[in-house]
Length: 149
Image 1 (cartoon, rainbow, N blue to C red):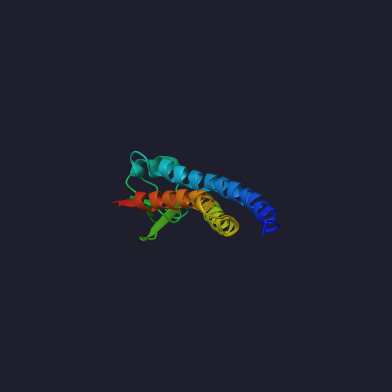
Image 2: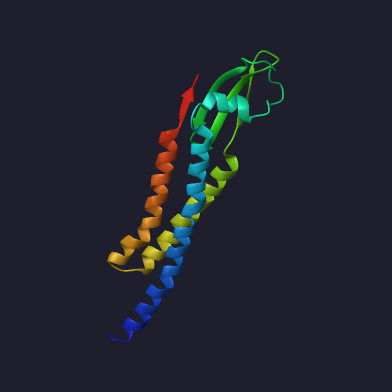
């Protein structure tokens, strides 16, 4: 039975790089949440009219904004403008950071599963921390979404 102990300790040591990589996966999700915050802070409607070059087909005048939203997926800002043909056209921010955040979330889940399977006892809880932080960040992104007409 003592011959199993060194092998078990070696397996545990090999689990920690997975935990460290899972911690690093928090960064893209944090950037995604930060970009959404920056896109949606203060007056979203005025940020739509100031920040965007008008999308192709939008009416060019002062009161052309129909609605503006802080969106959860993608985590960014959606601006809807009146179109020349009578409909609407929209411009959306946040796709690059949302895709990076989604990829990092998937990677963190895989890394966490591998680490938890290799660790024992209380160390498993430590391996779950990155996944919990990422889940909280996604919750913050979803709860921050709102529309302004």
